[in-house]
Length: 220
Length: 199
Image 1 (cartoon, chains in turn purple, blue):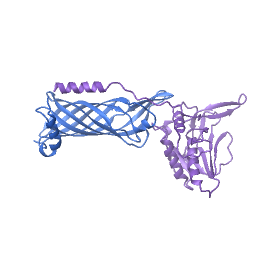
Image 2 (cartoon, chains in turn brown, green; image 1 turned 45 degrees about the horizontal axis):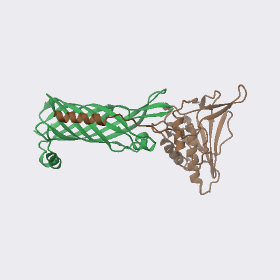
Image 3 (cartoon, one colour; image 1 turned 180 degrees about the vertical axis):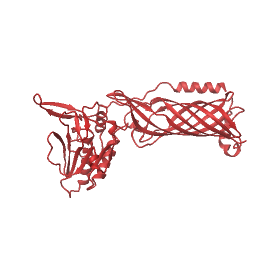
């Protein structure tokens, strides 16, 4: 019995030689932060980061029930959710728009409200926009964040693909990715043409959600 | 202790028919805790800590000598992870399920105490999201432990169990995300179980 016991323990000790997992270097990213102009002491720029706090996850998203927009939004949520290893971001569709953190409408973007910043994706045959209102302090995001997806050429054969790209792209903005990539292979390129996340999209999302945020969401 | 390989083979092949009379069956419920599953760094250090895992274990063992038994155990564990990131509050991460199959030898130490040493395979099953979304490869798991006989009533014995196991952790999603090498994970569990032997 003793020989077996000692052999077993010796085997454990040999195999238990220290080994640590090695995480990847996450330098594949583009800048996601919002650049805000303010002029209390002359024109200046501030670069601000935002991600949804963990206790606001899943983000409550109201999506207009028109032209498969809900299905496109579900695809976009699933796409971005898969970018994260530790459940940093998720969203769910809600029925009541008054309690929503994000509102996505099938609508031509209305005139921009004073103080808000519009992130627009101009693609044919559809386009999208997300309006971010940083409030008077620059350190707040006024909720709900509003996104718009609009079919500019309703009979175009490429409309379905366009709606898919643009909806996922706008959801990326609502997550806190407030800039466009300069690489056309990224979903967050200013003229999105892909319906998958590139390594840079994933890296940027991961970076954004582990970077200290400057802004907090403020509900009405 | 000597366990003739031929005898072991025969036991494995003929156990259901020939040795059922000598077989010992067990079922137990326990809690397993362990060292972090992974370390990461995105601006800050991130530790992926495993939560306590309720684990159900079923086993069968056969005598291979006057004192020792060889047994097979399968265990199903349910748990989740807590993400510990410096500068941020701890948050719940994805959940996971493990399934393991181990073969082990157990024998008496002193009085009601028995040792157990074994090895087997362990798999992290695919889950909904995050690092467990694709599940994991088959991992080698090494186990050691002790059983203490508490109460015997007829063919049933109430046992207290202590289990230690060691694995080199990774998952398919971690590998896909660029993680390399594996993480040493040590787990320790306590449980209560019932052994049944035919009278």
